[in-house]
Image (cartoon, rainbow, N blue to C red):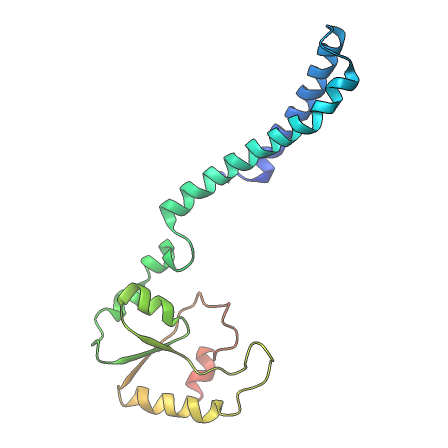
Length: 168
């Protein structure tokens, strides 16, 4: 499928400008007012063309979002193989995840966030991270906790990576 974006709409905007200028010239010669009067309407005409092009792009985006979803409601989360596998895990097992909101949204199960390595706001390292990761690993080995790691969680850079979890 071809993306209907700014690059596709640029020729229409250019064509609209050319037609508007040509229309002003024709009307000026035909006695529809002076070219100066018509030039006063040019900004309004250009604004109208711009609004219509934005409306078309917005309509295309709305259709796509309605079909595929956006964010955690998106198709990739809805059809996640990891979430499908988690459905078979006993609901009494506690979930700890890098995206606990996805677990809650799609499985209707509470989930806790993985321990934070670095506080994202002040940028300070968590002084208790080693102890928290060791405790989490012990709980996972005792099958009291299920660690759920999603690949699509790059926005949570302050959480431990899979390698860091395995090293504790």
